[in-house]
Structures are given as structure tokens and as C-alpha cells.
Image (cartoon, rainbow, N blue to C red; front, side, top):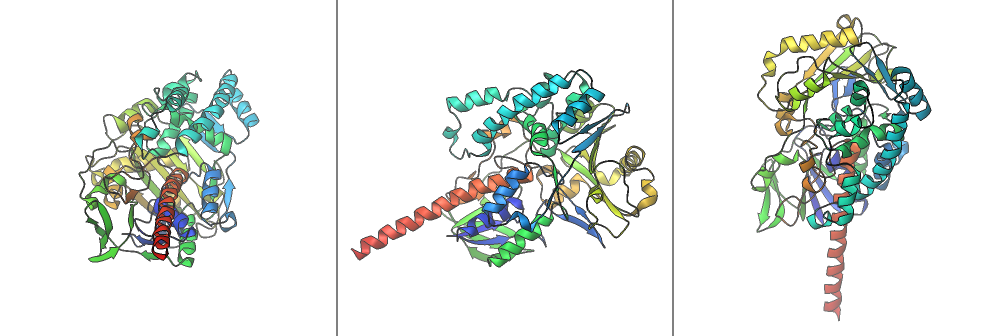
Length: 492
């Protein structure tokens, strides 16, 4: 079997690792000049910072899948973030999340007295729900829809409060609105609205405490370098700057693809681009999906190193509800948005020249092409003022390099509607309703990535790659068995 993978994002790369570990030939076609997709660096001279994902969740899943694929944890370093992060409110309140539950209860007693028991109850409930959700949904595929519609799965959905939103479920546990926000904003990690995304995604804030938040030494995107090195050891053909123009078919069976004007044969084709946009390669009618939110991203190279704060921080605006409405409902430029800062130089001095540092800031904004970002200089300057006033005093004087990435840049890169996280994690775009690894009518065309079940976030995309690879490995084994039976028949 030979598998052609279109797109060298983390989904395609992990699929390649798992397949080649079993001796299956793989060829990768990537339109950019480097692998990684959204898991990439933005660089300027000797400054280097993650361009996309920054928060490492579910570290056990990430390590287990890489280990299975043949990459030992000795080849990269995970650094535990403790504290996890701090949330800063406009009223001056700061709430810090800790790895230790004892410290967390003390922090809640300090900031939100009377909510300690509510937190303990939340964690107890979520422990059971996480185990249920992990087994029933993360570890399973629903390529055959009937596999989902079982009485047991329906009971699990009920236990996971899938009919409620993340915010509504969290609000049933915490009374203080600020604490409700602290345990519902995590749906934004995968581009979902806390007020409409199903409560199954409240497993994310639970996992932060239970499994921790980590940082990959050298940057999250350094994992791509490790994976590429391993694939090259296995003599995988990697084509960079190769734009795939179409998939070739003989009836309902893919026979290969055309890239840079040349035909390449394959027994199966895996599409790792942003799924809704990949249908054009298969000549199937494109479906319409609700995109995830987008981001306005700032990357800074700074002449100094700050020593205060945490690696991860959130800064809330005057109304989180209004901000979410502007991003997801009215789809307009936020008036007073919350924002997130990532300052890895507190942990890692390899990202900037000695004595200097890098800073990343993310502002949730609407996806789509209706906002002319070339005309939003005033908004961008206002956000830099906010970052300086609320997070990093004297920032403007310290800027040696700065880059801004807008939803238009994301759209031009190939992200659906400029959304940063694939399709939105809404109820009817989750689980069985989300595109599965075989989303097309063709026998041997598959998909992997943030828009494919089980969803977005690096470890979850890796899990999706594992589900797909397991299927392809099983198919290859069946093919070998059939060929052996045919050979035996000839000999007899």
C-alpha cells in the first residue's frame, strides 16, 4: 500500500509516522516551504515564537501517541507550567489557576470565598465525565454512523449534559460571574462560543487541573522538527512547495493525485488541509459549515525580559458576554475584547537573544472576510495600548520587532473562512455530526485535521490521526491476507 498525504500539518505528519512504523509507504505533499501547518514558528533574525498553538493540554495523550509512532519522549522536553495561568479582571481581581488542587481551593477561598465546595463538586463530577467522554468519543470513530446511535451513547450524552452550553453548565456550579467565565472561556481554545458550545467541552478546564498545562522547550512547533527528522530517517518522500491540484479517480476509486503538474500514483489519499476547502480536490460538492472564531495575533521581539506574571495570562474586558456576541453573533469588531498573552521567555531563553524576549498576544475576533483588516489600524494600536497598560508596562519602548497576523492572513493561508481552529465545535458539528476520517463517497479518500472528528487542539488532532492510521493499517493487513490467499490458491 502507498498512501499520499496532502498537507503536512500535525494530523498528516502523525498519520505518516504511524503508517510508516507499520511499513506502509507514505508520500507527503505540502504547499508551503515547510511542514507543520498551523503548528509553526514565526521568526525574525534570532527571534522565534510559536505562530499558532501555545498551550499544551492532554500531555499524556501527546506522549503516548508519539511513543506509539516511534518517537521517544527523550527527543523533546515538556515543562510543566505551575501556576497554570492567571486571569485578570477589569475590577482589579486576579485569579490564578494552580496544578495543585489544595492550592486552587486556597486561591478560590481568597478570591471567591464561599465557592470552594462548588469547585470541589465540579472536579468530582468532571472526573467521571472525563472518563466517560474519553472512552465513548475520543477513542472511537463514527465513520459508520450507526456505531454512534446506541442506547449507551445516548445515556453518556445525557450524563455529559450535551444539551446544555458550556457556560450554562458551569453556571450551575459557580455563582460568581467571574468564576463562571474562568471555567468556560476554554472553549475558545478550539474556536467555540462558551455560550453555545455543548457542555462536553467543559472537560477542557477540568483537564487543565487534572492533567496540567505544559510547554514544549524550544516552542510547540519544535515537535515538527523532531517528526520531520524521524520521517526522513524512514526515507519518506516529502515534497515542499508542492500544490496539489486535484485527486485522480477511476470511477469511485482514487488512483493518485496531480501536484505541480505531475501525476503521482497512490492506493489511498489522505487530505490534511482545512477540511471544508478540500472538497474541490475531489470534485465533490462543497458543504457549508459554521467556522470557528478567528484571531488577531501579535508577535513581539522585545529588547528586555520581563520577570513578572505567568507564561499564560488572560485579560478580561468589560463584558465577556458582549465580546462573545460580537465574535459569534453580530460578527463585528469587538468594542472591548478580552485577550490572551503567551510569554514563553519566562521559561525558555532559547527564543530570543540574551537579555531579550518574545511575546505573543491573541485577541478573539470574528471569522469571515467582511472586515477590512487593512483599515483597522486604530483597533490594532488600541490593543497594543491595552497590552502595555494591563500586562507589560513600557511595552512600546521595548519593541524591536513586531508582526501582526489577521483573519485575512489566516484565510489566505487556507483556513476555512479565516477561522483559526477548523469548523466550530457546535453540537451539530461534534461527535457523530462532525466530518469523520472517511467523509467522501470515494472508497479510499480520507481526511484528518482540526475539522475532522474528534476535533481541534494538537493532541486531539493527533488522536484523529491515530484513528485514521489504525483503519488504514487494518485495510493493509486485509489486503496482504487476501493476496496470500490468492497466492496459496495458485500454488495449490
